Length: 284
Image (cartoon, rainbow, N blue to C red):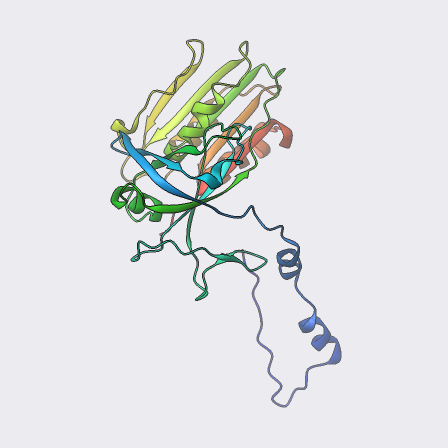
């Protein structure tokens, strides 16, 4: 959200010293940009294989010596995948400018964020599950790339810290959150009550989550005219949410914003009782 800025000219109206000082003082956003911590550097890797899990999801296996010391030990963590910027198939490594990664010509590289599986030091390969959709840089790359194609990974980003004493969990997510949900289901406390809601754009996007028998899983098909996340918002609004439980939700940014508002403003959950993350943003 930006602030309205009034343009000031010096025609017949000199700017006061106070105004000049204010204009010369870095904004809060600029100061934060200067202090922003540089993400982990990119590690080169190559495409070893790719497998279609569903008509809407592909698993790519990446391999490389630089992945050897990459450790993923938290569930629902993240890595950044750098792919060649269209129309070129040549990978160009970006530089960190203190706020973001940029290519030498000042353009933004094709970087997308994904949930990786657990990975120990010494392992030279990693699998990533990508949702296939129109207009996505990583999706387009995955569909056209051949074995040996070069990419790079940066990470890991923060994961989810599971409270072993938590009695119940409500998990909500769209197709982009399926890898994280599948991973979370392997680490949640065995005695906890777990309810899962997953929204898919097409029925054939459903995939085995590997959920234990005691876990309740409900799939939601998004109607063609509906906004992404509508079924998840409806699900959370009708769910029985325990105040001593935990809600984890991820998906389209506007949808999870609505979910966050319901959880905090309507249900009255504390911030520590919910983890809500925007995984992607709808571009209109």
